[in-house]
Image 1 (cartoon, protein in one colour):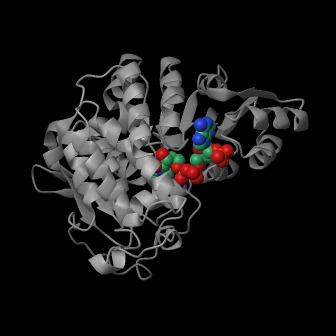
Image 2 (cartoon, rainbow, N blue to C red):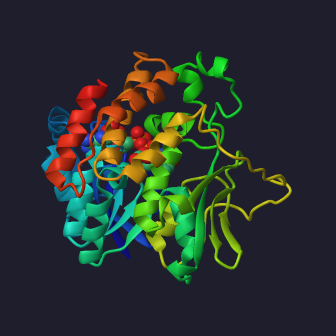
Image 3 (spheres, rainbow, N blue to C red):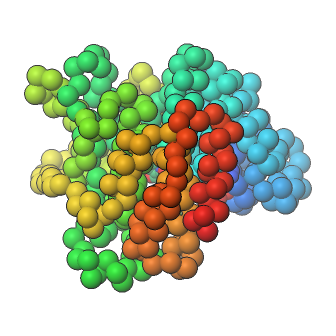
Length: 376
Ligand SMILES: NC(=O)c1ccc[n+]([C@@H]2O[C@H](COP(=O)([O-])OP(=O)(O)OC[C@H]3O[C@@H](n4cnc5c(N)ncnc54)[C@H](OP(=O)(O)O)[C@@H]3O)[C@@H](O)[C@H]2O)c1
């Protein structure tokens, strides 16, 4: 029985994680939960899964939940989140808080020597060197939940790292894949939130529409698999059936595929290295008979280019880019700036940032805060 803590249990990944637990009650038990402020859903999850402890980031919401659930220990604030991540009754932590808020609790989980299922890609963008070196030092497994990285992880099982020619990340292309420059000037928040193949939280959905999501995933792949940026490629694959591929030195390509549902990579992370019975019927080749591929357009979708630039420059630039992007996405969601301004403003802000090499955690948090202020 695997005992898990779920950071961000009320979000899209968190809810899918709970679905996996419902499906595998003999295999997985939830011992700790954390969310920001959605106490209605958190209360329902506590009643259903009976964790030992829960944390609510927002103190007033934590107080309200304590009144509703006097028999469950309810922690609050960043310390509460860290305590859930390091809880003695959990062996595995699902890191599914959105944004850099997930960094400190993910580090807390690794410090406490828990295996981590990593959905939160921003953690590796902001602090990839710190997170991966701490994971190596503490000998814990960092198992990707992001579908592309779960695919790469599965393709690489049993293979030597030296045999990799390149990693090929697939991208749906988002809702604006075929839009002209003129159309891109006018897209609305509602249009951008309508993802053609994946059902996800708002931040990652907007990142998918700008291709920043793929940019962040290139950086995530760099840290998870130690492959240089010039050997990480992106291919547009609108059906989202092939989740990513590895091409080897001998020319062979391994692809991992199934229907686009986060249940699959989450279940794999929770049961790794085993494969247990899944929730979906056998794959129907007649239903998905056409798989197509094309190159991404980094002129119309500049965020992808910016992410490659950030990764190549290194130091604090990826962290700066990630934090500034998070704020610009929020401003777009609040209808303060148009969609095309996300990439445009990000590029201007990144040009002014002088990257600091080999940053420690304090520097990373300072740069993150500075980027947020400038993007605001
Ligand atoms: N959704 C997907 O299909 C998908 C796929 C691949 C990777 N990812 C990655 O997974 C992460 C989560 O994405 P999502 O789509 O699940 O996001 P989401 O639906 O917006 O959910 C975010 C979760 O984080 C919680 N949260 C936010 N700030 C917090 C804080 N300061 N303290 C504690 N909890 C906090 C939210 O709590 P409240 O509900 O209380 O606000 C919620 O549970 C992101 O990094 C995303 O890039 C997502």
